[in-house]
Image 1: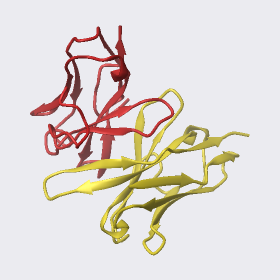
Image 2: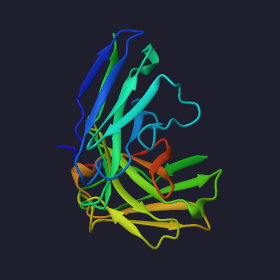
Image 3: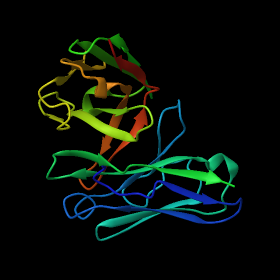
Image 4: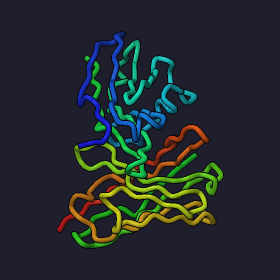
Length: 110
Length: 120
């Protein structure tokens, strides 16, 4: 059972907009910024969003993040087949004195 | 920036293994470093963190007392000493660089991972 809660799966057709939610508590998302990672099996995870809504250089602006209270979300607009991957949210947790991840959301592009 | 993990392999339950992560392309000693793992069919799980100076460390409860993180800044390398290994420690272990400011922190670069299999 992960500390941060994500839906196990999400799907959309090419061109659609999909959102992935991430729910936490006052000791993690409520107090710290949220990061999002994209992970393809067998490869290194890739930073997608940091500090709730900031994109590293090279990440398309189709990807956006937001945070409100103890929840966060990742939105992907103009869905493309190459977006099919696992997506994880993460934040620091004060009570655990460490990082916590969501369980991951497998995105399928239909 | 490049992070290259090594040291994974097959080990029996109760055994030990030391993972290494050699960094290049950045000033190693100013960055905290972390280990994150992914068990087969499971999600990402944070394992351990070490600050740039090496003076401060933290661990996930699942590995506390069994794993030790350390670093050699002269070699730009971070280590994970894993003792009393259990079947549930079987995973791909990733090394990640921490990018941090006064208001946020994140894992901005990751290695390709090294597989640890604990089995008799």
